[in-house]
Length: 415
Ligand SMILES: O=C(O)CCC(=O)C(=O)O
Ligand SMILES: [Fe+2]
Image 1 (cartoon, helix red, strand yellow):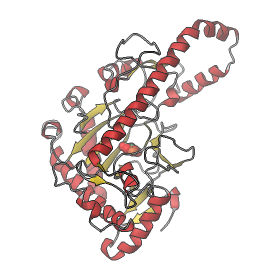
Image 2 (spheres, rainbow, N blue to C red; image 1 turned 45 degrees about the vertical axis):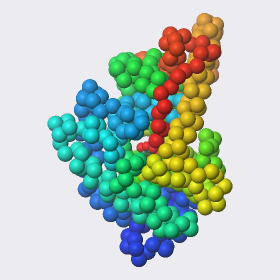
Image 3 (cartoon, protein in one colour; image 1 turned 120 degrees about the vertical axis):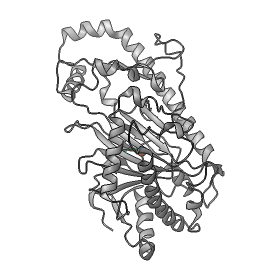
Image 4 (cartoon, rainbow, N blue to C red; image 1 turned 45 degrees about the horizontal axis):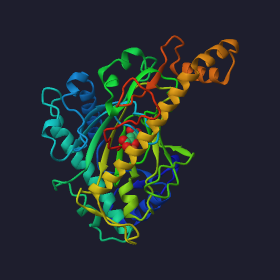
């Protein structure tokens, strides 16, 4: 097992014959890092490429057409844009995404006219992803001392309460104009998606990620990336407890080669393994060089809603997967709410101090604040662009920024 490029590589070739050694490798990778590459997984390069093209065909549709398939939080499926708030930052990812499930979404599959053969192609790909994830689940079951079919039985996509899903993700092209007035005045940016609107000058641009730091609440995630060697996914180590928001400071980039999957452990498996296997924080940074669009596809393996999650030591209470997700959402929701309220309070304070700051800035043009401003300009590489702030609205009074007022948030399933 090689540890090239920071993370271990799990080779699934001759799976049945090599199972024992695969289990050993995968348990080490999942215990030490929670992230690993998977090769010889059986999904061909061509099929992966076709899937990226299919996703891009969907994203190329006008927003008004994509809006016919809106994200439905209870079903965790559909299209969103700037709507995924991350509990670590309280800010939305700089992306749009389209999520599909195995059941109950007849109204969310793009029509034949919008994207020809979208549904059969995507369903076929989901089946293939599921085959890979079932192999990995068998390894984890045996590695943790459960019967071989322990996890596969409760991640059964033929059951109507299956929660497995596939998500196409399009991180926007950030060349120069992304956060300009035109983009910010799109209906999506204005309409408080996730009750947090992107508007006005961004002086906290550095807080934005393509995908903010987070853990996945699922069991396992398979991630396909189509720009090998130029990706910006990074993982952090050392999470001790599945409810922890605390993240470390040491981030390692993941650089999969062509046709390699990145696999990460999610919170469900961390809980199921009594915190042995690590569901670690990860993030997608804003790029510094290649600012063009980035596309990824994630397959989320989640336990069926009615499956009971409890580790072998039984040191935590048994919980259904449905309740596990509900609790995770509540935790995230509380945290995002707190961050937004803090931001509103900060903003109010800034506004109160603005006149004084402006006059002192005009006297001294070399302050620390000026340095921050320059960084923002460098990023855009355009000194004439309009700078934008994240504008957060209290839902009880959109124009008020009183720190006493609290925000209300629609629950956003942060996976
Ligand atoms: O797109 C990526 O590289 C990472 C996406 C991710 O972490 C997620 O969707 O949970
Ligand atoms: Fe993730």
